[in-house]
Image 1 (spheres, protein in one colour):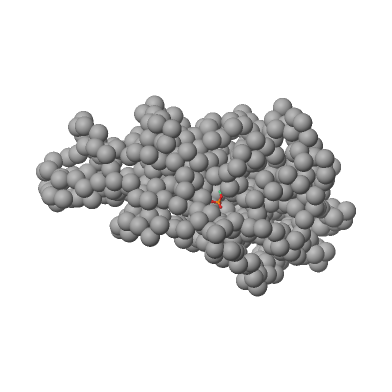
Image 2: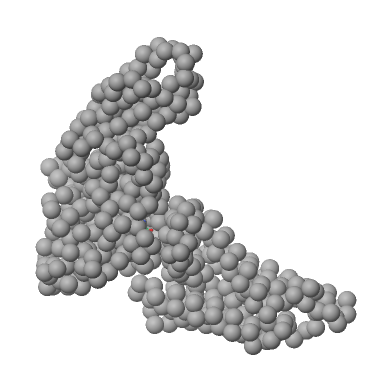
Length: 502
Ligand SMILES: Nc1nc2c(c(=O)[nH]1)N[C@H]1C(S)=C(S)[C@@H](COP(=O)(O)O)O[C@H]1N2
Ligand SMILES: [Mo]
């Protein structure tokens, strides 16, 4: 028992030193990311399909802090086990550390544009970790140890752990400080000719409390991605490579992208993981270059029916080539609501495609477009069991009153949003309890690519009531009441809320 505890402590100290040294060396060699982040990324990406549902619920929508802590906990358990095994056979300890090293080096080298020396930080960390393990385990601290020996061991391991943790956090703090926020703030967005901007009808927003505003402010826009830390990609380092099954490969810099003809459009982005009534949806004004223009230049070859957009952090989304070229305003966006793309939303460049869920279209920190076929390549979430095709399903949501609200009898304004991107919303109806469907008032929209606010005045009578909403798209298709979960291609069902009127 004692020996085990000391072994675990030695393992933890060795791992902490390995990570701290790797982190520090990564910064010295000018790497844009750290081994912990690369390994964390690999951990996230390689969660087996067998635990897919668990992985999705934990890794998909969870916040970054939980992810970081989770990764550290996993690494710590692994390190402790290695330390314990190493007290029996030293070689197992070294082998365990070697596994760390292989994973770390593979992760670092697998990153987009990884320099040839990307293995150096991990190698340095692993060697330091092995040395610490050897040093600590060469001192007797188990059954036969004297109290002095034990005290020495605890102190040595404790100080090592603490020093490594401080070094690790200091490096992390330093590297975030060197982030690209200053670069982003210095960007001069090209101004657009007035006819390229979709005007916003002044009455698109009813301006009711609790009703989602027509344009979602950047700070309130939902965030979904698999990146353990937000990639810091400077605009001057950015290039986009369009390659694969094309007649002409294209590489374009940020400066060149900014010189191209641009459009500005309101487009509502939605996440496939959004539950009925959920908030993983937002509407923004995006400015960017049409994807179709770039594809026309690259000239996709016969059979290249999928465009795989790849992020600097390895995320991929697969979009039908036909959708990108069917005339809709699919774009490589550089600005969101009039400012350079926020870093968390994909700075410097992301893709935005009206009508498709984000996981098949909206790649942030975009660096590559690869023309291929759906038969030849499965993108990130497709490998994990989600549908390869992800058109957004017609949905609607009641924002006000709130679910569970206590209301006074009399006139109540019911309002919410409805969406069927790139088809458009033609009708929204609300039902009180089992009463008849009543048509809501639809507010104007700039295009069929955004959500649409709706309102309905209700004469509320005392008692408990259930309010239900459903929408119909411009093709006359009414939103289905069949309840389906988000997995594999988007939730369906009608949104209902319960209110008490007195
Ligand atoms: N690089 C990268 N881009 C990504 C993702 C990701 O995990 N990594 N997630 C996608 C998903 S699932 C969605 S719904 C949208 C969300 O975009 P937002 O975070 O700007 O709202 O980004 C897409 N782009
Ligand atoms: Mo998503």
